[in-house]
Amino acid sequence: MLSSKVQDALNAQINAEFWSAYLYLAMACNFDADGKPGIANWFRIQFQEEQAHAQIFMNYMNARGGRVILKPIEEVPATWEKPLDAFMDTLAHEQKVTALINNLYAIAEAEKDYPTCDRLNWFVNEQVEEEESAQQLIDKFRMIGDNGMGLYMLDQELAARVYNVPSPLAAK
Ligand code: FEO
Image (cartoon, rainbow, N blue to C red; front, side):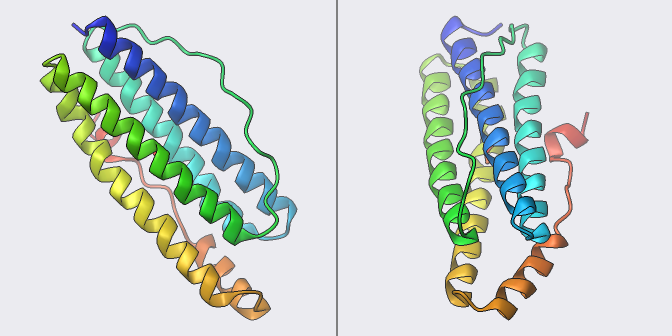
């Protein structure tokens, strides 16, 4: 059984994960329109991952007898002029998500809800990877600058990204 504090916090996090999905889908559409299909692919997989994060929380709430409440998803930005801008926004956004996960962890701990802390550990580690991958891509785009060949090659590299089902869903 989930306390109402933990249930509310989990529902807020589900909304944040869907907002993240929406943000990355907007980025994918932006770079599709901009003729950068590899970058669009990278963001489309990010979109899938965020939907999976929401699903992990929904499965967890159902397993604990909680009630999932889906709230409206706020509008996201629509345009990014350069890939570097989008990846800088990605890093800033993931840093905010890390703070949300940490806050959720603190709520669960205060409620002595150890199963929720345990579930959140996966997200704590995931956020380390999310921030690291955004930072690595920022570094690459900074290195390239406006070099057309460099941008073309990095777009090709990002076209190779494939979606992997996150382990908490793969185990189901
Ligand atoms: Fe669901 Fe990108 O964190």
